[in-house]
Structures are given as structure tokens and as C-alpha cells.
Length: 181
Image 1 (cartoon, rainbow, N blue to C red):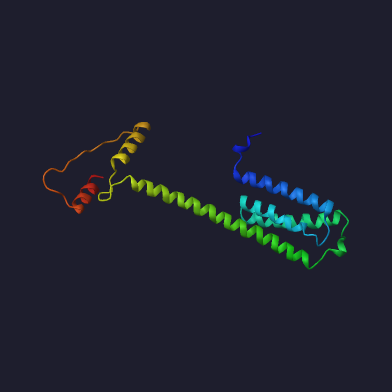
Image 2: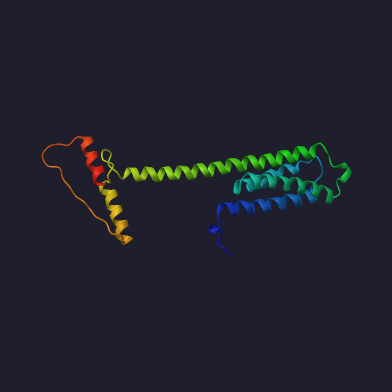
């Protein structure tokens, strides 16, 4: 078995969700009766499953929650098939499913936004290694590029130039850099 720190966060959330479903089901088997409110505890494992996976599995976890709740009440004998509250069951089903789907949707959107921001960060780091006027590499960026090429054993050429005498305008420097690249 892998050490706990090697287990990913989504896997931990799914395990916690499964443990929560089992624990609440056992509580309903032992102590459950209509109106006690133990069924509200199912929101926690539904939300954990939705955070780990997304809206579809979150919605399915909501369906599992209502199935376990109703089954627990039937098995412990506090209710029978005819006395299952027909009005409350659809309301519970909709609320569990909507909670799972909504949390799963926003968790997925959050992961997507984080991935996008990491791509933007990579782009900004690349830009920080370039000079403002010519967009050519700074000394730090040049050193990193050379080290990557040497490490990968790729051939490269290095052109070094110096402007002596008159001071060049920014557009001349840009044009020269563009021609050389």
C-alpha cells in the first residue's frame, strides 16, 4: 500500500466520501427514523465526491445518498414501503443531486482556471527573460537557453554584436533583432 502522502488529494476525498457514506448509513440503520435529520449528513460525502471528480459523479453521489437513506430507514424497520414519504423523497433527491452537481461543476471550473493561470505564469516567466525593446533574451534568459541546449546536446549558434558610436533608436534595434532572429 502506498504511503498516505503519495495518495493524491482527489483519491483522499473519494476515500473520505466512501467512509462517510458507510458511516452515515450505519448511523441510520442504528438510530435512524424519519424527522431525526440524519439524512442531512449525506451532504458531506456527496460534496467530497463532487470535489474529487466533477458534476456527473457528484450528481450520482446524490442519487446514492437518497438510495442509502431510504434503504436504511426500510432496513431498520422504522418505516415501510407504503409509508415512505412520497413528497420528501423527490425533494431530498433533487437537493442531493443539485448539491453534488453544483459543487462538482465549480470544482472543475476552479481546476481549469488554475491550469490556465499556470500557463499564463509560464508565459510571464518567459517574457521576464526578454528585454523590453528588442524582445531578445536577457543575460539570464540567454544563460538558461544555452544551458538547455548544452544539456540536450543540441547545436546552436551565438551571435554577439555591439553598437559603437551613435546611439540607435528603439525601432532600429527592434528591426535588427527581428532580422537576426
